[in-house]
Image 1 (cartoon, rainbow, N blue to C red):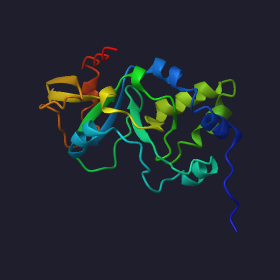
Image 2: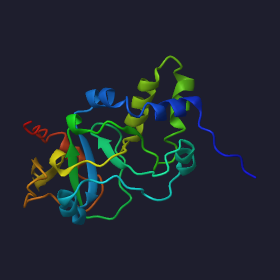
Image 3: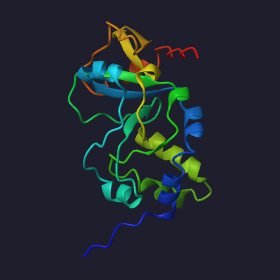
Length: 202
């Protein structure tokens, strides 16, 4: 009989800190983006960018060991980190979340093999790093954050325009000129020249 997986102390500490890592993460990155199938944009505008259970993944046993039975999350890419491309089929559109709108509960993405073992490898190489610093290194190297709650449409922007004239617009009301592209990740290089979306008025 196989022994149940036991998280390492560092993995347990990162999971236990999922309510306390947001501010440091959001101080490092100016924008978080989420690639979605274009056909889903209208539905997201009507409800939310929903946290969902993506099905089986390489770290399911570990997440179960943390006691998180729902396994629902939204993956977002911190702009400027390693580009992790989608495994879905296009065409795609791109949503954005400003740091001020990022929900409080977040952790390491568990859909990519090797993500959760990486903190202990980093700690072995750099034992003086804090848990927070190790978490940020993993995010930078893997390019994805797992947000454990829905993100309402009022907090989302969508990339609009054409390939040579792109702009972020609020998702509400739904724009008529949403940018649609065929290949995952193909628009990310251009994002560094697109002005950041404006924060909605309080």
